[in-house]
Length: 323
Image 1 (cartoon, rainbow, N blue to C red):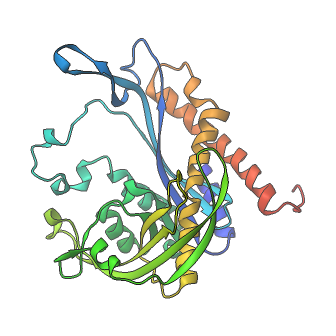
Image 2: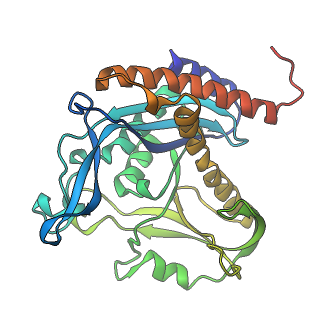
Image 3: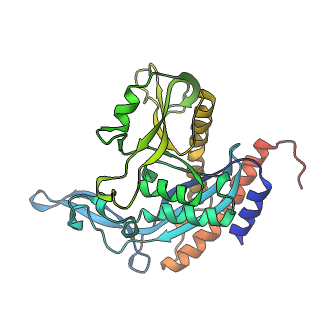
């Protein structure tokens, strides 16, 4: 029901709609964690003979897609996936010389593609959807899936992929581009202090090549790289350095700034997760099985969206009548 309501709000909204994707972890303490499952393994200290001691964290993982207008008004969830882990398979346990050779269908990262498919199918207007993801979403298969579905994406780059004729990387090609403009943004440091940052903008359409192990399965793609790097970062501050990948054509500074502003809204899905954990206190539940916890968290997701929507609608339409 919530998905259908999100679809209706999408249809009534105007312009492009951002579909923010991210994963969140819900941790619990249980005497019998097996009925819930595990999320990850963490180091707790050093054991005997210099070997590290570890423990597995009891919990549930949730990957969600939150639809949002470019003004920052959340329209609701468009896709969601819950899961836990029973086994922890490390990179070397795959017995593969290169993990990029492992099919995407065998990886947890398939969730990024599944959410794109689910949300795009739900809205039935792929050209209006812009899927936004952090560095974890820098997956070549995601780029190919978006092209196949006729939808769009803006994701933050994590991998310096091969480009052009295969004899250089994206970073090599971008280093030869002159700065095409400056953009001033207001930012905060970890202590909340506000400062103005001046970003140098570069952008170029580049032929991006698939990973070495997947050349036969995927074709090269023509994508746009946007690089926004802070000029003269003050001492003690972490400078802004964003490398974004998108399927959109960028022909002006204004278009590059628009895509940067869209990606800057990605943090709002972190706000949504924060409402779930601090407002609804989803991690304080005493339920003992994964199935019950998933049902509870799903209900909290709707409540959290309502709280988030009420907050943002009062900012974007402060003079609107109560109805």
